[in-house]
Image 1 (cartoon, rainbow, N blue to C red):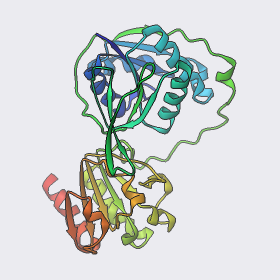
Image 2: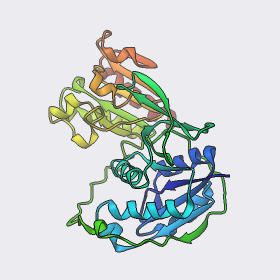
Image 3: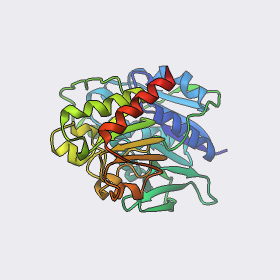
Length: 320
């Protein structure tokens, strides 16, 4: 059976959820071979094996931490040359897409980004994507070289499928290009205790209808009751009510959770482009003609200041 290379996104050995989703997709195409790089890489093996990795290639070097993405690209290229996989899968983060693009150029292959599903095809993996602000769904395959595909978070379930997970050390030699751009400082992001926006299974977002930064406490309360991430529309961010890092939309982040709750968001195309691939969409808006209602699975016409607190109380009651 063909081997599928999976790039591992981890933090000091803690594997992030999108990688486990990639392993689920990789098993549809062949046998997953995971590539874990940097500090704690060897510590990822047990989790990766539990979720289907037949082999785990690990490498650690100061270059992975001290320089930008090129050392990781060169390591992934070394893994590609060692394995000769049928495809390379990478999480669709900002860094992941840069790594994938650089790898595709180096190995002379086509690339597909932001896939939301993968299936085996007669001529190679077939990727499903959302196009033109999610107005269309397309199916594509790479026609040249080994497919390099980045996949959006929440595109597949995390499924346990115990495999051998044999750990092998990956030999990597770095070129001068790898050390061309040095990281001079890092500032840890303040933790809110909530899930990462692009990886969350549930996202609760607020828009212009929230009518002020102080009122986002209502959105946060609902999110916390659901164990969800908090998002915001561009209008709310531009007004200074919520940080840009939480913006969902064409000029913000793209999310694809199992449940997306839009409160006080009209549904302009700019916002829809960042959340239309959500599995279930719920909108709360007092304007029955708001464009968001053309998109949703469930809509509530009402004042969010009445509806959202009631929903929060109901969630807490059912959980308690």
